[in-house]
Length: 279
Image 1 (cartoon, helix red, strand yellow):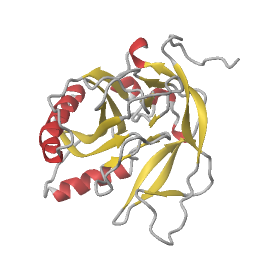
Image 2: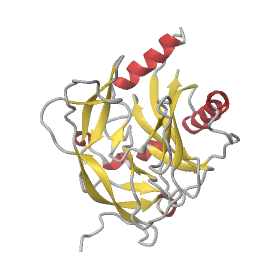
Image 3: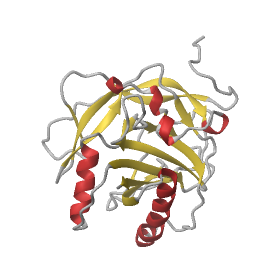
Image 4: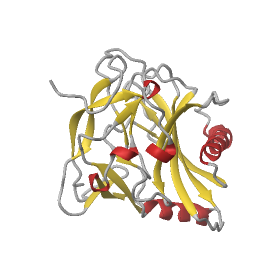
């Protein structure tokens, strides 16, 4: 029998597959959307690994400072997430206040969002913000692409901001409950070594970004929230300019299929991305 490598309550932990990057020599790249006709094939490959995923509610509290991730109850007044104009006006402001309070930031800039829908639900192809759950471990930004994205957003706003610290965070919540279809698993940033993260060029039709994919290591610690409700959310860091070598600045994450559930309500979730700035 495989030994569990960290303490959890056995009744609430789950073992499930998460996709990890297959080690590859040389530069890596993938496409942010569908590859254009005749394009060079992307060279990233993933392999499923069975990992233990602990219940965040039954474990010691995760914090942004110690683990690069926290889980909490943050009710939302927004009820119609299909109204994108209202979502950008009301939910962006709501998310910004949650992030500002948690990080004690001077300013928070929410700059985009993704809606993820389970396989049983249709995707509207004209809405790039709609997509399927991502089933491999990744971090949305790198130490290069996070500052570049902030500068792009400030240029679009014709704004200039001096800051001593920049943190890129995601606020993630389900829109249907209880969440059992492709729930989110988040890795404790303190259990990830820098050599396990690989920079991957992310190619779009109009620009090039960069993302981290995660290679598997047995000491990595994963968490989820069983039967997560719409009043609950994950808040995790993808980049922190002030993170010291011994402090976690990011938390890899991935959706997974819980093998205990055979019939589930299709997932709908929303993830907003934001920059927290400190003067």
